[in-house]
Image (cartoon, rainbow, N blue to C red; front, side):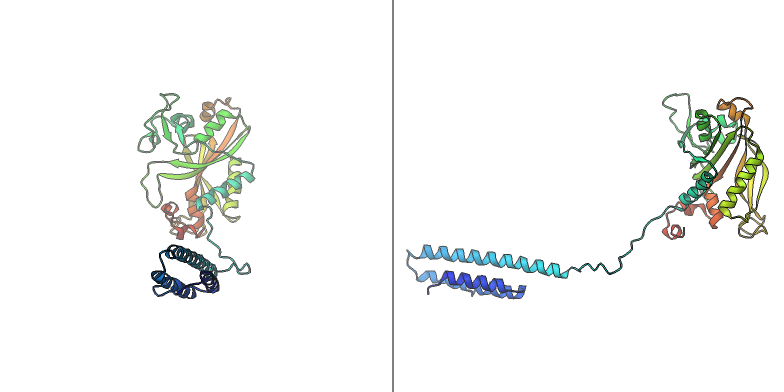
Length: 345
């Protein structure tokens, strides 16, 4: 039996090209390359040919097999590509997009921004300072005596290594933001008005109201003829902007080594309106911050002329302000990264 190779090639090309799906293409493959296909018959026909005809005919059959195999593989890839393309969803620009959740500022960051923004509106600048401080800036320059309990290792994180520039200088993690006051007053002359937000560290046991790391905001205003009445007026405006115009405030005498006179600032409980409840301990008032007039010894430590300037200072805990403003009863919630809590703010 003689085969017309050119005719078979044309027929196979046409059938492969017309195959619209994988099933039809498989039928064409079986027809030509299957065990009972035409290619098998071609190889069987070699047995009846003469020795002179067999090499030439075998060459043609191999070329035919290679051609059909290549065409089928190309068609298979083409059908698979169309199937993948058809399975993909087409983009419909008229359908509303899927909104992915977007993060937002942490509640403590929001509180810091609110407080600093309020003071900026009153003419204060925002400054920052290092969290690793010298013992002089953190204690001595702030008129804190050497035998004061806050200098003890149980109340302050001291670093093992001294200052690399001066081995006699002890370093520590600042226990308050007040050292930034010293740094700025050393560098600049009055008038000065700035607030300092930042982290502070104290080796306190962690519980619902204490943490070994927390945030403070320190404020300082220095100029000629600054009075205690300026301090009271400034804090009154600040607290009304932060808690609302109806908030009530009072000052109680207190003691801080770096201010004289010193005072604690209370606001009427926002829950009970000053009547007394569990939040305010039945007192009707909530302690909010400390303040006072800058002690003359602090001015002396930074090199300011004696009796030339006066100043006011105040300091507040950011976590406490956030807890009071939003009714949060456990400081640990700020640091546990519980999304259920953080998403509320």
